[in-house]
Image 1 (cartoon, rainbow, N blue to C red):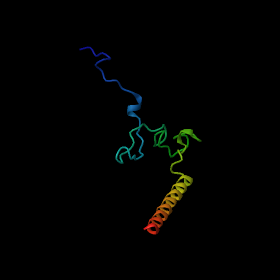
Image 2 (image 1 turned 90 degrees about the vertical axis):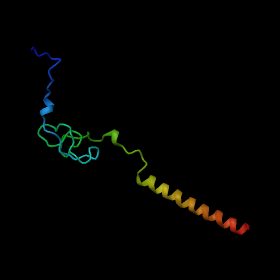
Image 3 (image 1 turned 180 degrees about the vertical axis):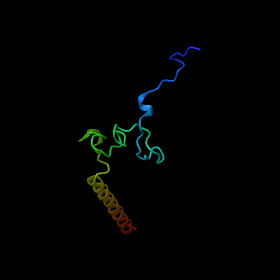
Image 4 (image 1 turned 120 degrees about the vertical axis):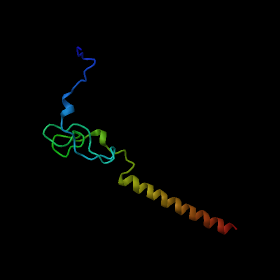
Length: 97
């Protein structure tokens, strides 16, 4: 029987490449399945070595501002103001009775 490209499983070079040994949360602590960068033990995303990982000054990784120190301090200040206001309302209700 003649083998054609439709019936034969295609083989790619990266299938035999060594895999990244970084443990990931997404994969329940199992190693990452991405191919490792040539000459390194990690893939391009997990890095841990020069030349791999995201580029320097990556604009996609800028914080959105919700978890910055200033935002946390502002939320804490708002919470304390709300508590003071509620206490003030309670005092006014007690005086009015």
